[in-house]
Length: 259
Image 1 (cartoon, rainbow, N blue to C red):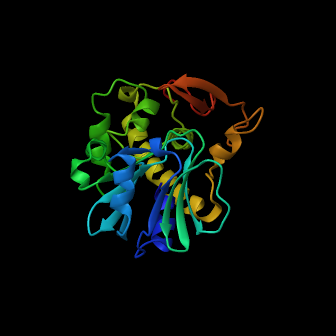
Image 2: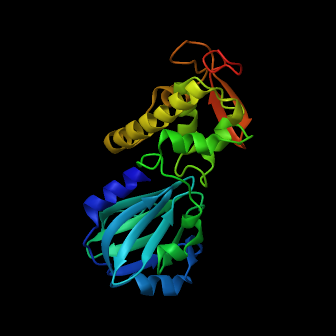
């Protein structure tokens, strides 16, 4: 979502919304679809923000357009006359330019809120891992007393905002930690290593997504292949259901027991 926010900052800040087309009205959660379209029309985009996996398009004279892409959503900016993708759900018009919300599985959604403080999901998000507040001491506090798996903890948006399933796998592989290890069994040296790995992986992910347009990582690249092997040791990768998500790991590099 950070790369989407950066793309939109380059393309729609300062533009005035001239119209809204709702091709799939159920994509809109609040307010009702017709009121949603009326509110946006005539407003100007003044700022693009992000909180966790939520995109925040701040408007003048009032309100914020909050968008969550979920699993298959995407935001595309292009000329009004460009062909419309068959899974386009919402079109926001800026004269000859359009912002299109494309979502194959219809899990994504949009809201317009008067103030972000009144939008409950934003208030329940945890610390941003790329901001200064995510210090080593804060990371230790988040781990203290937790009894779930370390993979599950990384995915908890109320603790750490914005880490998705594939990057949780990448982080744990680079840190050489088994995804099913209980978080209270992570050693102090591993806590420090994991903190640095989280920041490094996400910083590289943002840079690489901006350049290539798709997720890039040593482990990410390997895990999508048939008969995938660990790019570090060459052993076959395994999959398991951890924290209710399909999880890839190397049983040789990411051992359950302390090393």
